[in-house]
Length: 335
Ligand SMILES: [Zn+2]
Ligand SMILES: [Zn+2]
Image 1: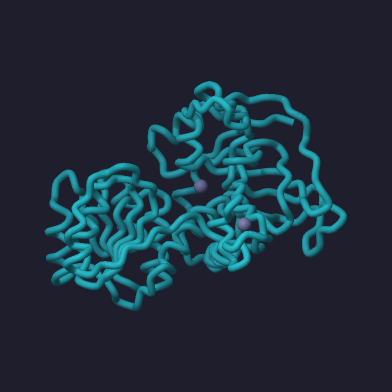
Image 2: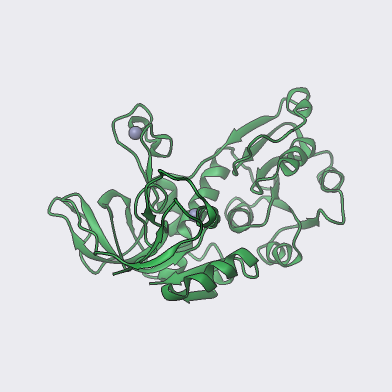
C-alpha cells in the first residue's frame, strides 16, 4: 500500500510502497478515506531527530473498518469510524484514573506509531469511534481538534453570557469559538493577526474580533468586558498572547493554555495579584472524542470551511505546501 513515511534522520517526508499493516486480536484495520494535516504534522515534516523511530504520519483520520481482530467486539468490517489519538498503557496511575492522555507510556497514532496517511492503518479497537450517519468522513477528521477544544473548555466551567477570549483563530481556536458560542452560549472575543481567520471567527459567531497588528488587544478586551474577560482560551503558541490573556482576564478568572510554549518570558504579576487560575490542556480522551462526533452529527459546529480543501495522497507535497501557506484553514488528504 502507499504511505507517507517520516524518516527522522532527514527533513521532509516520502511516499513509499509499504506492506499493509498486520493487526493483533485486539486491533482493527481501517481503510483510510480522509486524513487531515495538523500543525503537529507540519512540525514533524521538517523535524530531524536521528534515532527517532520512522513512522507513517497522520492522526486526524477517518475511514471504513476493513478487518477486525478475533477479540474485537462492538464494531465490524464496513463500519465508518474515526480514531482518537492517545493510546494509554491502561495500567499506570494516570490511565487507571481515565487520563490516557497523561499516560506514563503514552503512544500516539501518527506521532509515535504508524498513523493514517496511508491506505490502511491498524489501531487498537478502543481507539475507533463509530461516526454518526449524518457526518461525512471529511467532517469526522475534525473530531480530533474539536475534542481538544472541548477538553480545553471543560477545564473551566463557562456559564451562559460569560466573556471568553479566544486568542489565536487557528483550527483549535475557531472550533473553540463555535463551542463557546453555540453550545455554552457565552460571549466571545477573538484576537489574531490574519484578516481571513478573524472573518471566519465572526462567521462562527464571535461578538468581537481584534486584529492585534492594529489594535491593543488588552485595552480592547478590558473595554468591551468592563474590566476583564471571565475566561481566556490561548491557542497561539505565542508567549505574548498568553501574557495578553493574563492582563485581560478579570480577577479570579481562568486561563486555559492549549499550545506548548517553550522558554518564553512572561510577566506573571497579574496571575498572582489577580489570583488568576491557569490551566494546561493537552489532547483529549475517548469521552471528548465521542462528544465531538456527537456535536458534529447534531450540526452544532460549522465545518464547511475546514473540509473544502481535499488532496489525493499522491499530491501530499502540494497539500503540505498549501497547509504551510495557511491559505485555507485545513488541508485533508484522500488516500
Ligand atoms: Zn491534530
Ligand atoms: Zn498509562
